[in-house]
Image (cartoon, rainbow, N blue to C red; front, side, top):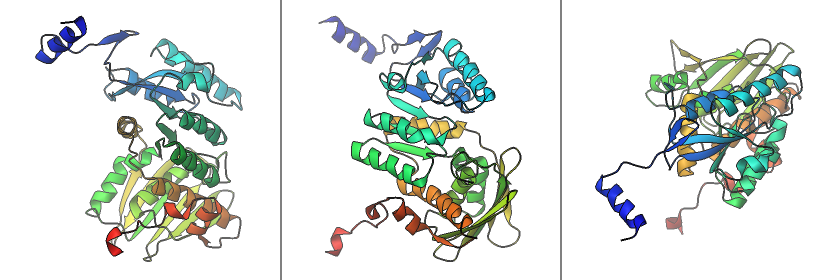
Amino acid sequence: MNWRNFGLMMLLSGSIGPWVATVHGQNVQPDSLRIALIGLDHPNAELFAQRLNNPADPSHVSGGRIVAAFTGASPEDESIAARVTAVTAVLRDKYGVRIAESLQDAISSVDAVLLLGTDPSLRLDQASTAIAAGKPLFIANPAAASLTEVVEIFKLAEAANTPVFTASPLRWSAGISELITAGGGKTPAGVLGSGVAPFGKAGPMVFGESIHLVSGLISLMGSECESVSCVSSPQFSTIVGIWPDGRMGSLVFKHEGTPSFKMSRIDGEPGTEQKLLADPTPLLREIVKFFQSRQAPVSRNEALSIYAVAEAANKSRGNKGTAINVQEVLKTSGAPDAWFSPPVDPSSD
């Protein structure tokens, strides 16, 4: 019997425990996913490293570990540059993360990629590199600088057979779950959302922080929004979405202040309102499950619907509040009809 077979026999018989490596003082199981984190200017960069790389953390998420990182940012001011410097030091010195010289270097020896960062104009190029390498990819919201770029990312992913997942932490917010529970699992007759959402870097409004509330709206009302209108002033914006069965969702944003969100379901009197707290830990658990299974918990159609509603709101805002058809926006942005056509039932032939 050779030593390899002997070791396997002893492991199966329970005579020895599972092999555990020690990396930077941390115990790491051999089946842990190796993850690259791109975008060290993002508010969740340090938190994700803490949750994944520190088993003693009360909110530790098992199954993966960040082993490489790339700044992946284009600092526009001193505060962003300072944040990148500080997060880089923490990831390297506290969590044993290798700081790569390039994006390609960061993803060359990992199993999956976390694409964070605060500049959506960098997303398409960064996502393309990860997709071409065949690495399962999570992209933080906003997923790109425009709906056209989000569509292009999913086209690249389909062509390369590489799984891509994008979502907001609000989708797994306790507040959203409670709103679903309040209706007994039924789709709301209507939704009213409000919050503070500064203008974004890409797009005049909805590709900034308000994309998170649009995500909450779609998760509650469904991805079949038919038309969107938006009226806006320098201080406020209001988005109204209409669904084919007459249901309606309305989002009101103030553009100055710290981002915060509330949402109510309208099913009669009284309405049920929840403050939405974007704890990223539940999302991180979903990300690790996705990396393991390569099955996204949010479908491509749902993800695209969020950005289509956002894009339609931008178009309506620039056209004095005229209602914009969401499917037309998707077509204009290059989304194939086949992505949204119902599957053919073979039994009907």
